[in-house]
Every structure is written in C-alpha cells, then in structure tokens.
Image 1: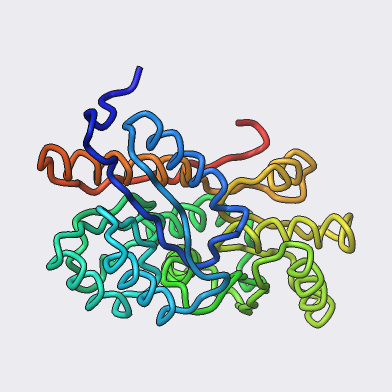
Image 2: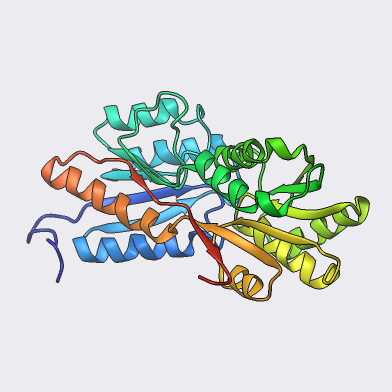
Length: 286
C-alpha cells in the first residue's frame, strides 16, 4: 500500500523533473520510475525540459519552477557550471534540488544529492571489458549523441584512458539523438576510414546507431561495437551479435529515488544522499 499519501486537507507535494533531450527514448524508464514513486508516496510529479541541449533554457526552467511554486526539483545537471547559480537560488528559496542522470561532481554545486551512474568509472569499465578484443594501433570510432553533455565527455575520457596502452588511432563522431540518422552518419565514417573495425558509444542513441549501421551495411566485415544503455533495439542487436556489450545504468532508479528523496526531505527533514545507479555489463549471455 502507499507509504503515506498526503494527509486529508493537505495539498500534495508538487515535484518537477527538468532535463535536456526530455523526449529521448532513454528517459521512458526514468519517467516510469518517477510515476511509480509519485503514486506510492501520494505526490504530484511531472517531467519537462528542452528538446536538445540548451543550458540557458534549462536554467530558465529551474527559475520558472521556483516561481511556479513547485516543492522540489530533480535536475539533470549536464554542465558543471551552467546551473550553479539557479540551484543556489532555488535552495535559498526553500525549494530542494537533487540531481538525476548527470551530476555536477567536478565543481561545487549546492544540489543536495545525485542519483546517477559514476560516469568516468563507467567509461573505464567498458574500456577494460573490450580492451582484450582491440589490437594495438587499431582505428577506433568513438561516438557521442550530443555535444556539450558532461556525462558523455566523462565516459569518453574513461574509455580512452582505459585503452591508452593500445595506442589506438581515435576518431570522434557526434551522431545526433535519433538512432536511424546516427546509423547513416556512422556508416559514412566507416566508408571514409575502412580501417575502423571498432565503434565505441557513450550513450543510448549512438550505441544503437552503431549496431544498426553494422547490421545494414557492414555485416561480415569484422566490424563490431559496444556502448551504453539499454533499449529493446540495443538488446536485439546484442542478441544478433552486432553489439558486443552495453553498460546499463538502471534509468528507472534515476526517476524513482529523486521522488523518494525530495518527498522524505519535505515531509520529515530526512536529508537526501547520493546513490550510485551502477554500471552493469550486459552481454549476449546475461
């Protein structure tokens, strides 16, 4: 049963999630986690944001949420400095802010906690997992679905650091957030450099795109890919052997726990705490 719905006569808490790429497929399980926690705790919750990466517009949405009287904010802190001021303003106004999906861990930020993957470490984990299959001096294509997202940069840094001893020849490609379009961009990059056999992604859309590109245009050429996050299509491509593995980050928890933390903080003064959403390796065998 519900943990504790709002007492009779008390208006339910209103919480809001604010994210870049708010309509991306990745956030579907995040939204489900948010809805389930909101129903369990008897709070009102919505998910909003920008279609792309626009930190100024996202900061404005945080200010609007405070002005509109929301009781708590879950914010996708995709940039280490762009949200410092608005987070402080919100907290000074009595509106708690927790980070979800991406945290600002590199520089000071007043947010109370973060529910997310340890991103650099996750990049290193993927690099270590695939390193035995990458020959010395190999041409490797690294992909990001967007520019200007610290999470993707952190994972890329971890990947490259884990592969440093391989003396690879790296190329980096921004694919966009739609897997079908990304597949065409990746195929073009592979045609330009026929020596590329390995594609390593940093997020959901580009990882899926790499698997699709190999399936459509490069099956039987020895090309393979690995990357991040889960979608039905990524799982299908893993089973089909186009993607060797992916790193999961439990997006459902990234929607569920911020609601729990903000609600407990507002109702009982229980301080939010950081939670690691994990970095499990998913292969054909698991």
